[in-house]
Amino acid sequence: MVTTGNLDVIAFLAAFTGAATASAAGNYPTVAIVDYVYGCMKANGETRGALESCSCSIDVIASIVPYERYEAAETFRSLGLMTGEGGALFRQSAPAKSAIAELRRAQAEADVRCF
Image (cartoon, rainbow, N blue to C red):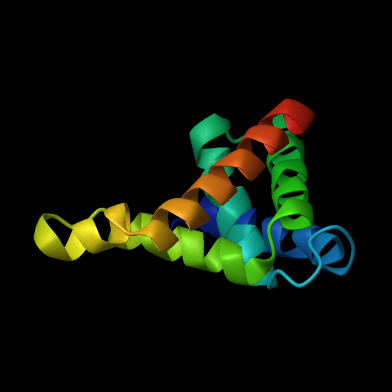
């Protein structure tokens, strides 16, 4: 359920991350940046400090992983949640493992630098 408060946060994140798109986030679309920051804030608290750490985190990830690889890793990770043989392909294939490992390394670096 989307509430007015959530809409305010989303609008703020969209405006806030617009500047990041032109700088550190490079070719990451604004919606991908906002989606990452929003999810990160949900996981780390909806505070100003979390906003700063989460926006720093996506900037670091974007400086390490090209958007196409980020998108592939997120797709593999999401589809890997499916049960059965369909999900196994997205969890166990060499391209899936490689893309997810690359994203995890970038996220670990972002954690060190930003949190």
